[in-house]
Amino acid sequence: MQNKDELELIAHSLNGDHDAYGVLVDRYKNAIFYHCFAIVHDEASAEDVAQETFITAYYKLHLYNADYRLSTWLFKIATNKALDSLRKHRHEIKTDDNVFDTLASQQPGPDKSAHYDELHRAVEALAPKHRAVISLYYWQGLSYDEIANVMSVPVGSVQGWMHRAKATLRKELS
Amino acid sequence: MKEKDLDGIFKRAPITPRRKLSAQFTHQVIHHLNEQPRQSRLSYIKEFLQMKLIAKPAIALAAVIACVAIGSTSYAAVGGWSGIQALFGGEKKVDNARIVTVDTHNCTITSALNIASHDKKAQSIYYYRVINGSKLTNKQIVQFVQGYCEGNDPAHSALDIQSELNKNPLNQGTVVGGYIDSVVTAISSSSISIRSDVPTGDTIETFNQTFPRIDPNVIVYSGKQRLTLADIHVSDHIALSYRASGDALAHSETIRPDQIDTSAQVVVAISKNSPDLTAAVNYQKYNGKEFEQVTPCSTDASGFCNAEQYYSQKH
Image (tube, rainbow over all chains, first blue to last red; front, side, top):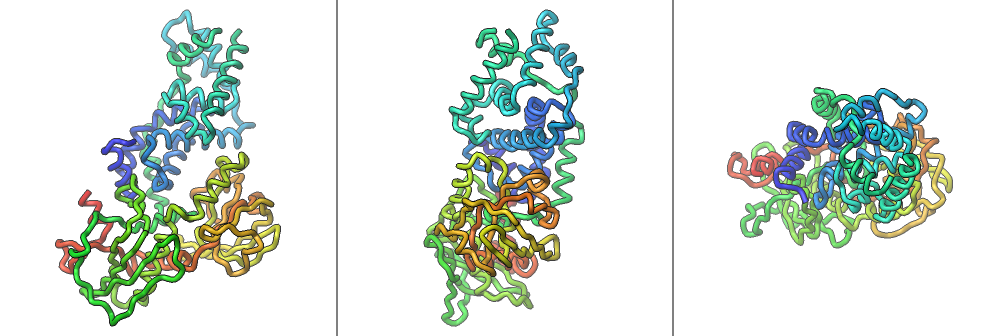
């Protein structure tokens, strides 16, 4: 359930108040951008997908069910668009090795950077929908129920994907 | 590596982009919305909500302003749907316009001002200001409301169609709705041709499309009644859904019908529209021009204010 402030912003947005919608965009843009990046692994593509997400959400806002968190609904749109983007551009996206250098430099301890580097390479090798599940669960803090809603699949499928993703990672990292 | 280790590492080490979002990100989103406001986009049946029948706080019937009924005429929209009924409730002359009252029964409103509610009101009253010189009749205004209520009813077949489509994994995230009200110009067991008169800005553009691929398990409804493809005929008014690919999927929000490669799309559902819903779509082009929804107020000399503005300010 949404808080009153957010419901008011949504109501104003539905009435065509773009400033109100801008507040919502500001509130969620980074989370959506990070999630998109976790799936598409390219900053420019992630930003494009995030932008498309907010544009689509605006046009579909009247269909949003306020019984659920707005962020969950936005992640649903973003996940679909990111996966679509991957399907559309799968031949164009190339691995950028530099990303791992940067990622490693952001980690808490130098002694662990190689380990994180290795982990992130392994994550990138996962199926896109498995990456989406990991991003939503670990980095965006969604529950399995919420992820099932986002991915439009039963909770059992989410659990299965998570199990397979972890199994793949364990194998890659062993 | 143990599972517990993976959990810990993931939580401590999210994959993050190397740079922040563009500082212009929000501005770019809003700029796009300014360029393509909701009114100009193509829509599917549930997007009938765009017509914005504004739900208002409950008003006791006794408090309703007196309207002068024209003779004993009583208009009821044709059709009927899940007990939904819109009735002519009277007319009052004001400066340069007339106020038409419409009484509704069992009309579901998803208010633009109260999005959390999907109320099915046993009885609600709506007022419309129709400018002098307009050829719109009171009967047409009543039909507009009836069509709106039908289009937004939770029992509408759009929900059944959506539920059935979701059962097919091929449809996950790939089904796109065509225009809300198209006319069938040709049909066979394998293809369908339609004409859509789509409001785009201040004009209405006509698009002719032929979809040469129809899913063998195409879902067909009329109201709550399940039909078959053989029940759809030339001149029927329909809204179709197709399993999209290419730009039709990637840009489903804004793409024009004449930019869709229909040969690559597969028709998966057809919803036959009621006469009221079709009429309401047609009358929509007058909304905001020849008529508008109003509500009783004390701040306007006529005693009526634009409903959307009034409730926006009140809330």
